[in-house]
Amino acid sequence: MFEIIAEPNRRAILSLLVSSQQSVGEIERELRMPQPMVSKHLRVLRDAGFVESTVDAQRRLYRLKPEPFQEVDAWLAPFRRFWSVHVDALERHLDRMDHMDHMDQSSTPTKKKTRGRR
Amino acid sequence: MFEIIAEPNRRAILSLLVSSQQSVGEIERELRMPQPMVSKHLRVLRDAGFVESTVDAQRRLYRLKPEPFQEVDAWLAPFRRFWSVHVDALERHLDRMDHMDHMDQSSTPTKKKTRGRR
DNA sequence: GGAGCATATACGTGTCAAGGGATATACGGA
DNA sequence: TCCGTATATCCCTTGACACGTATATGCTCC
Image (cartoon, rainbow over all chains, first blue to last red; front, side, top):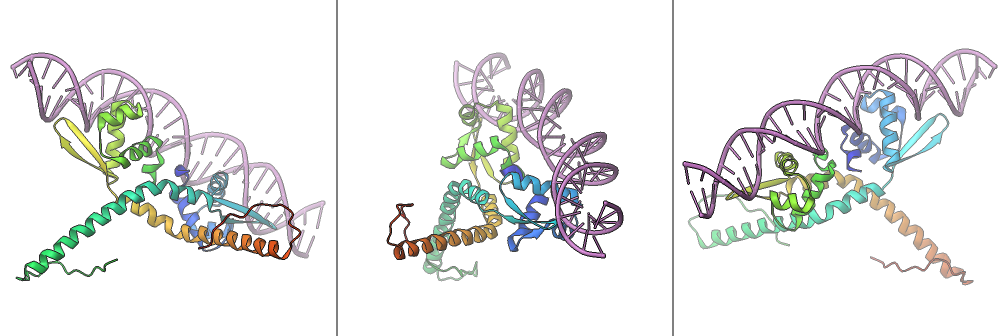
């Protein structure tokens, strides 16, 4: 699944499809990519469940499917917990600096603090 | 960046480091992976900013860095909007079925609805 | 039914990176 | 200073995949 989105052209195609469904020809024009390459990448994306297609005469319209993205999100979850801990630590650190600023009135013009409290 | 996490062994290493920092030898043992391979993957991860290391005598302790994960999360953001729309659509669909259940008291024992409202 | 467009597949080629093993570097202890 | 441990780097081979070109399939309209 990660191998799929590791390919830049495939990510470009996915980004295109966020706004709305597109035909192969539209993708080909917008990404300036030879048509067989578009079709092949779409094939990979479809096999991996990232997109699905419907037939409209000779055209095929491709649109996103949510499931794989949710899986990526699920993989990311543990790390998200980890990095928010770090953001909290940073916040605490900055809070301490705020306190030091309050105690030290000599006002050496350091960093401005424009953070809001939760 | 996606190429980095596309490699299964590297994802395994990252998952290991979620709980706490680890030395190369510990990773080697837990993942049953030859040591040069561990070092090489760690090198890639470090160059990409996913991990950082500190020296402890002959040991090197590796721990996660949050930034690249936040970038992955940022990339995922537009798609998250997209898939929550779909979840909402599903919710609306199920809500409609709820209404139909209420209107139709013939109570054909279909799916139980155990969803909560937000 | 034939022409033309839209899309898919087949094949050949080059590149790049993972894996394995051997070896180098660095540090701590006797 | 010598040895053992811990980690990093080097070399080589192999496989996978992206890309380009050529060709096949399928549909619409005249």
